[in-house]
Amino acid sequence: MYAVEVRDHIMIAHSIPGETFGPAQKLHGATYVIDVAFFREALTEDDIVVDIGRAHDVLKAVLAPINYANLDELPQFAGKRTTTEFLCKHVFDAFAEAARKGDLGPGSETLDRIRVTLNESHVARAWYEGAP
Image 1 (tube, helix red, strand yellow):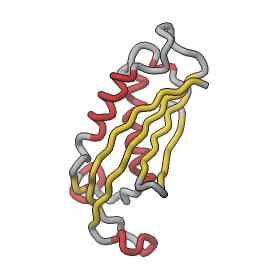
Image 2 (tube, helix red, strand yellow; image 1 turned 60 degrees about the vertical axis):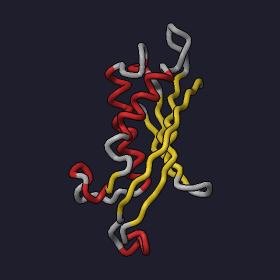
Image 3 (cartoon, helix red, strand yellow; image 1 turned 60 degrees about the horizontal axis):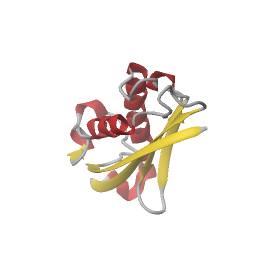
């Protein structure tokens, strides 16, 4: 299996309602390092997995609306718990759509899998992985 990965980071504020979340129920900040990995069994006609430059551009575009934002105030997250796992799926969905549309370069619509990892710290991370 071939793979290519791009990385960026964001800073957000949010609160996560529910007794399960203890002190995270209060408004707090988080800095995430986001890795998006693309997988395929065979390379494209151009001998790549995806266009790395385009993948990085899509990552920046996907993250821009939530970078330096209070997620509690964004309408797309109203009524949602913006856990790390939830945010992984949010980013994944945007990349799956970009892949299907060919926004990651020729052949991106035939990717086998995409994995989005949000690194909360050096000791904790979450990811969502699936077929686009």
